[in-house]
Structures are given as C-alpha cells and as structure tokens.
Image (cartoon, rainbow, N blue to C red):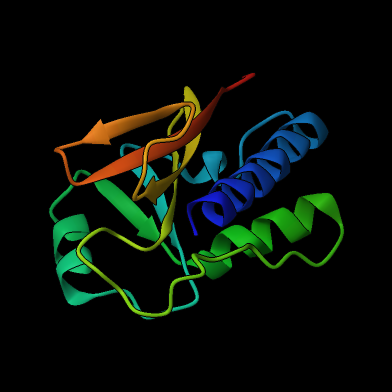
Length: 136
C-alpha cells in the first residue's frame, strides 16, 4: 500500500503546483491569518484522538471538502482528492495531510516501510512529504 500512498501524494502535490501556477498562491493560503491551516485528506471519519491532538496545536483545521472546493474553483474542473487506501485504521495516521502557511505548503503521507525521500518518525512509521514555497 505504500506505493499507492506515494502515488496519491504525488497526485495531490501536482494539483498543488498546478494551482500555484494558475493562481499565483497556494490553496487556502488566503485564509491563513495568525495560524497555519491543516487539512486531513481522508474518506473516513477522523479518529477522536487525532481531532483532540489537532485541536491543541496552534493551527486551524479545515475539512477535506474545503481543499477540494478550492482546487475546483481555481482549476475549473471537478476534483476528488485521493484518500489512503487502508480501510482499517491503525496506530499511524491513515490520512494524507495538507499544511499551509504564508511561506510554504506541504502534503505528507505516512508509510510503513522506508522509501526514497522518507524520514523515520519515532521508529513508528516513515513520513513522505513534498513541499513548495509560496510565490507571494
């Protein structure tokens, strides 16, 4: 499943770059005021522990649908963001994460095995992340 996660993340990242090339900014960047924005990209209900943990962070959480709508608005076509293929949640977050602030945006996936470009996170999983700097 890790290879599917990498492909999904690359798809989301390509949409992010296309959006920036077309609009000159990053998706949801205009909404960033004093706190960064994070979107958990998933087709499943978020686990309570993840919602609680996110609520304690100094950022605003937006729903997956807000990011899809923003892509659709700027790119002019229907967008259905890919979601983690695993149907049963485990200890690692089975979501893709979009994070944006005034200077950059990243999308990340959590993998179970090392792959090129991944970082080991607390000996529990591997983080595959792609980032782009803001052009404004």
